[in-house]
Image (tube, rainbow, N blue to C red; front, side, top):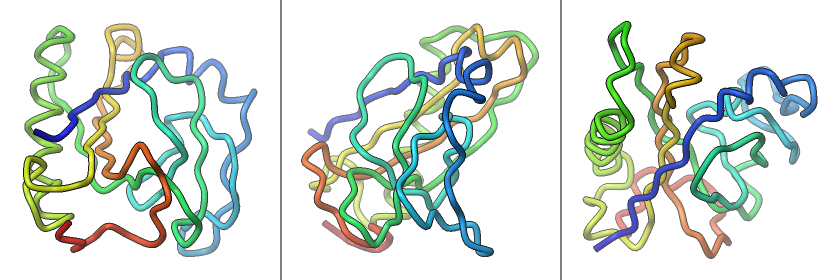
Length: 153
């Protein structure tokens, strides 16, 4: 069975946005060099350094052509005004990301050699309007070069 980890968006991420730099991007929006960014600045198509479970203050993004660990492949906004609870948020995030993983990589998570991570809102970030779930595919060993789209591994 494949690893299905969860990385929580930290509410302090918005507060610390001035402490980390934005990613240098070209006109197409692709990251052009390695940078430490606020988690809210990571977009679909971005590649990252290693991931760890728990609250995240910053992430390393880098060009996908360089060796990296994970690639953001899908995002969605959860609905509702009241925070549904951590378990429900994780359940929705896991379901969405697993379905999108299969479409992106070409295999279900259980059949893939790649791992699935996702970032999701926690109660504190929900209160300031965070509803985004961001799905990432990759390997805790790193060494991925290029996109995992259609990798079928």
